[in-house]
Image (cartoon, rainbow, N blue to C red; front, side):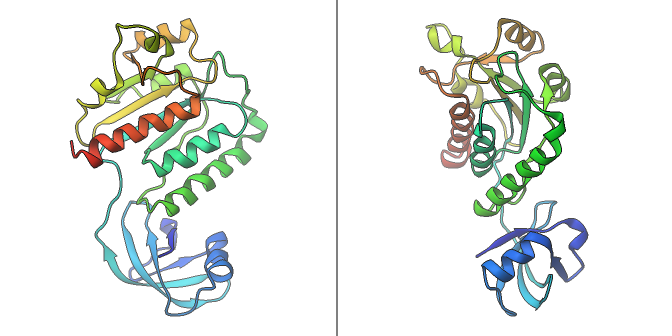
Length: 250
Protein backbone atom coordinates (compact mmCIF):
# COMPACT_ATOMS: atom_id res chain seq x y z
CA UNK A 1 0.00 0.00 0.00
CA UNK A 2 1.34 3.42 -0.96
CA UNK A 3 2.75 5.52 1.88
CA UNK A 4 3.15 9.31 2.17
CA UNK A 5 4.80 11.60 4.72
CA UNK A 6 2.47 14.52 5.33
CA UNK A 7 3.60 17.82 6.96
CA UNK A 8 2.21 18.50 10.44
CA UNK A 9 0.27 21.59 9.35
CA UNK A 10 -1.80 19.46 6.94
CA UNK A 11 -3.26 17.28 9.71
CA UNK A 12 -6.66 17.83 11.34
CA UNK A 13 -8.47 15.78 13.97
CA UNK A 14 -10.01 13.23 11.64
CA UNK A 15 -8.53 14.03 8.24
CA UNK A 16 -5.47 15.35 6.46
CA UNK A 17 -4.63 17.01 3.16
CA UNK A 18 -1.99 15.87 0.69
CA UNK A 19 -0.56 18.65 -1.46
CA UNK A 20 2.22 19.38 -3.94
CA UNK A 21 4.25 16.58 -5.50
CA UNK A 22 2.59 13.95 -3.32
CA UNK A 23 -0.88 15.01 -4.49
CA UNK A 24 0.38 14.77 -8.08
CA UNK A 25 1.70 11.28 -7.31
CA UNK A 26 -1.65 10.16 -5.87
CA UNK A 27 -3.65 11.60 -8.75
CA UNK A 28 -1.45 11.16 -11.83
CA UNK A 29 0.93 8.32 -11.00
CA UNK A 30 -1.18 6.07 -8.77
CA UNK A 31 -4.45 7.06 -10.50
CA UNK A 32 -6.09 7.36 -7.10
CA UNK A 33 -9.87 7.28 -6.80
CA UNK A 34 -12.26 8.22 -4.02
CA UNK A 35 -12.44 5.29 -1.64
CA UNK A 36 -8.86 4.12 -2.21
CA UNK A 37 -6.78 3.42 0.90
CA UNK A 38 -3.30 4.75 1.59
CA UNK A 39 -0.98 5.02 4.59
CA UNK A 40 0.06 8.45 5.84
CA UNK A 41 2.85 9.23 8.28
CA UNK A 42 2.89 12.15 10.72
CA UNK A 43 6.29 13.83 11.32
CA UNK A 44 6.18 12.73 14.97
CA UNK A 45 6.39 9.10 13.87
CA UNK A 46 2.90 7.62 13.92
CA UNK A 47 1.03 6.31 10.90
CA UNK A 48 -2.63 6.09 9.91
CA UNK A 49 -4.68 4.17 7.39
CA UNK A 50 -6.54 6.73 5.30
CA UNK A 51 -9.26 6.79 2.68
CA UNK A 52 -9.34 9.24 -0.21
CA UNK A 53 -12.48 11.38 0.08
CA UNK A 54 -11.93 14.28 -2.34
CA UNK A 55 -9.54 14.67 -5.25
CA UNK A 56 -8.88 17.96 -7.05
CA UNK A 57 -5.63 19.94 -7.00
CA UNK A 58 -5.08 18.49 -3.52
CA UNK A 59 -6.21 15.23 -1.97
CA UNK A 60 -8.29 15.06 1.20
CA UNK A 61 -7.85 11.88 3.22
CA UNK A 62 -10.17 10.67 5.98
CA UNK A 63 -8.41 8.89 8.84
CA UNK A 64 -9.78 5.36 9.10
CA UNK A 65 -7.60 4.15 11.96
CA UNK A 66 -4.29 4.69 13.68
CA UNK A 67 -1.73 1.99 12.97
CA UNK A 68 0.32 0.32 15.68
CA UNK A 69 3.53 -0.16 13.78
CA UNK A 70 7.18 0.77 13.89
CA UNK A 71 10.14 -0.37 11.83
CA UNK A 72 12.65 2.05 13.32
CA UNK A 73 15.97 0.81 14.66
CA UNK A 74 16.01 0.61 18.48
CA UNK A 75 19.35 2.49 18.36
CA UNK A 76 19.63 6.07 17.12
CA UNK A 77 22.40 5.92 14.51
CA UNK A 78 23.99 9.03 13.02
CA UNK A 79 26.21 8.61 9.98
CA UNK A 80 28.78 11.38 9.66
CA UNK A 81 29.97 11.14 6.08
CA UNK A 82 33.09 12.89 4.82
CA UNK A 83 32.11 14.58 1.57
CA UNK A 84 32.73 12.07 -1.22
CA UNK A 85 33.02 12.53 -4.97
CA UNK A 86 30.18 12.46 -7.48
CA UNK A 87 26.78 11.24 -6.39
CA UNK A 88 28.10 8.97 -3.63
CA UNK A 89 26.56 11.09 -0.88
CA UNK A 90 23.13 10.72 -2.49
CA UNK A 91 23.70 6.96 -2.58
CA UNK A 92 24.58 6.92 1.13
CA UNK A 93 21.49 8.98 1.96
CA UNK A 94 19.17 6.71 -0.01
CA UNK A 95 20.54 3.35 1.11
CA UNK A 96 21.32 4.57 4.62
CA UNK A 97 17.69 5.64 5.00
CA UNK A 98 16.53 2.20 3.89
CA UNK A 99 18.86 0.64 6.48
CA UNK A 100 17.50 2.76 9.34
CA UNK A 101 19.80 5.73 9.95
CA UNK A 102 18.29 8.42 12.18
CA UNK A 103 20.50 11.27 11.03
CA UNK A 104 23.15 12.16 8.47
CA UNK A 105 25.91 14.73 8.96
CA UNK A 106 27.95 15.49 5.84
CA UNK A 107 31.29 17.04 6.79
CA UNK A 108 34.28 18.54 5.03
CA UNK A 109 37.47 16.56 5.60
CA UNK A 110 41.11 17.34 4.89
CA UNK A 111 41.16 14.78 2.10
CA UNK A 112 37.76 15.54 0.59
CA UNK A 113 38.29 16.05 -3.14
CA UNK A 114 34.92 17.71 -3.62
CA UNK A 115 34.41 21.20 -2.19
CA UNK A 116 31.03 22.26 -0.82
CA UNK A 117 29.59 25.16 -2.81
CA UNK A 118 27.53 27.35 -0.48
CA UNK A 119 25.86 29.00 -3.48
CA UNK A 120 24.32 25.66 -4.41
CA UNK A 121 23.70 24.49 -0.83
CA UNK A 122 19.97 25.22 -0.73
CA UNK A 123 19.29 23.36 -3.97
CA UNK A 124 21.41 20.40 -2.87
CA UNK A 125 19.73 20.16 0.55
CA UNK A 126 16.32 20.18 -1.14
CA UNK A 127 17.51 17.34 -3.37
CA UNK A 128 18.86 15.41 -0.36
CA UNK A 129 15.56 15.84 1.53
CA UNK A 130 13.64 14.48 -1.46
CA UNK A 131 15.91 11.42 -1.60
CA UNK A 132 15.46 10.56 2.09
CA UNK A 133 11.71 11.17 1.98
CA UNK A 134 11.23 8.85 -1.00
CA UNK A 135 13.52 6.22 0.52
CA UNK A 136 11.57 6.42 3.80
CA UNK A 137 8.31 5.88 1.93
CA UNK A 138 9.73 3.00 -0.08
CA UNK A 139 11.11 1.23 3.00
CA UNK A 140 8.01 1.97 5.14
CA UNK A 141 9.93 4.01 7.70
CA UNK A 142 7.99 5.83 10.41
CA UNK A 143 10.32 8.81 10.32
CA UNK A 144 12.40 10.60 7.74
CA UNK A 145 16.03 10.88 8.84
CA UNK A 146 17.39 14.30 9.65
CA UNK A 147 20.01 15.72 7.30
CA UNK A 148 22.24 18.34 8.89
CA UNK A 149 23.92 21.10 6.95
CA UNK A 150 27.51 20.40 5.95
CA UNK A 151 29.84 20.88 8.93
CA UNK A 152 33.53 21.08 9.59
CA UNK A 153 34.98 18.27 11.70
CA UNK A 154 35.25 20.62 14.68
CA UNK A 155 31.61 21.63 14.32
CA UNK A 156 30.62 17.96 14.08
CA UNK A 157 32.49 17.14 17.29
CA UNK A 158 30.82 20.03 19.13
CA UNK A 159 27.37 19.11 17.80
CA UNK A 160 27.57 15.48 18.97
CA UNK A 161 28.95 15.91 22.49
CA UNK A 162 25.88 14.32 24.07
CA UNK A 163 26.08 11.03 22.12
CA UNK A 164 26.46 7.83 24.13
CA UNK A 165 28.93 6.20 21.73
CA UNK A 166 31.27 7.97 19.30
CA UNK A 167 33.45 6.05 16.86
CA UNK A 168 35.23 6.51 13.56
CA UNK A 169 36.24 3.95 10.98
CA UNK A 170 40.02 4.09 10.63
CA UNK A 171 41.67 2.13 7.84
CA UNK A 172 44.92 1.71 9.81
CA UNK A 173 42.96 -0.45 12.27
CA UNK A 174 42.37 -2.92 9.43
CA UNK A 175 46.11 -3.31 8.87
CA UNK A 176 47.12 -4.41 12.36
CA UNK A 177 46.64 -7.47 14.53
CA UNK A 178 45.96 -5.23 17.53
CA UNK A 179 42.69 -3.41 16.88
CA UNK A 180 39.32 -2.45 18.31
CA UNK A 181 36.62 -4.27 16.37
CA UNK A 182 33.36 -2.64 15.43
CA UNK A 183 31.55 -5.76 16.64
CA UNK A 184 32.89 -5.31 20.17
CA UNK A 185 31.46 -1.79 20.25
CA UNK A 186 27.97 -2.48 18.94
CA UNK A 187 27.58 -5.58 21.11
CA UNK A 188 27.60 -3.26 24.13
CA UNK A 189 24.99 -0.84 22.80
CA UNK A 190 21.69 -0.54 24.62
CA UNK A 191 18.25 0.26 23.23
CA UNK A 192 17.61 3.99 22.67
CA UNK A 193 21.27 4.93 22.92
CA UNK A 194 22.73 7.39 20.41
CA UNK A 195 25.77 6.37 18.37
CA UNK A 196 27.64 8.42 15.80
CA UNK A 197 29.90 6.76 13.27
CA UNK A 198 32.32 8.96 11.33
CA UNK A 199 33.34 7.76 7.89
CA UNK A 200 36.15 9.52 6.06
CA UNK A 201 36.13 10.49 2.37
CA UNK A 202 37.92 8.51 -0.35
CA UNK A 203 41.37 9.34 1.03
CA UNK A 204 40.47 8.52 4.62
CA UNK A 205 41.26 10.65 7.67
CA UNK A 206 44.41 12.74 7.95
CA UNK A 207 46.69 12.27 10.96
CA UNK A 208 45.51 15.61 12.36
CA UNK A 209 41.87 14.51 12.09
CA UNK A 210 42.63 11.20 13.78
CA UNK A 211 44.29 13.03 16.67
CA UNK A 212 41.40 15.51 16.95
CA UNK A 213 38.78 12.76 17.02
CA UNK A 214 40.65 10.75 19.64
CA UNK A 215 41.16 13.85 21.80
CA UNK A 216 37.37 14.27 21.80
CA UNK A 217 36.54 10.71 22.88
CA UNK A 218 35.92 9.19 19.46
CA UNK A 219 37.11 5.59 19.40
CA UNK A 220 38.87 4.34 16.28
CA UNK A 221 37.55 0.96 15.13
CA UNK A 222 38.09 -1.63 12.44
CA UNK A 223 35.07 -2.48 10.32
CA UNK A 224 36.37 -5.70 8.86
CA UNK A 225 39.80 -6.73 7.55
CA UNK A 226 39.31 -5.20 4.10
CA UNK A 227 39.57 -1.54 3.13
CA UNK A 228 36.07 -0.44 2.15
CA UNK A 229 34.99 2.35 -0.16
CA UNK A 230 33.61 5.34 1.74
CA UNK A 231 30.02 4.68 0.59
CA UNK A 232 30.31 0.97 1.43
CA UNK A 233 31.57 1.63 4.96
CA UNK A 234 28.47 3.62 5.93
CA UNK A 235 26.15 0.86 4.77
CA UNK A 236 28.25 -1.84 6.43
CA UNK A 237 27.85 0.02 9.73
CA UNK A 238 24.07 0.25 9.45
CA UNK A 239 23.56 -3.30 8.21
CA UNK A 240 25.62 -4.63 11.13
CA UNK A 241 23.53 -2.74 13.69
CA UNK A 242 20.31 -3.90 12.03
CA UNK A 243 21.46 -7.51 12.15
CA UNK A 244 22.60 -7.20 15.78
CA UNK A 245 19.41 -5.63 17.13
CA UNK A 246 16.67 -6.67 14.74
CA UNK A 247 17.64 -10.14 13.57
CA UNK A 248 19.56 -11.47 16.55
CA UNK A 249 17.28 -9.59 18.94
CA UNK A 250 20.14 -8.38 21.14
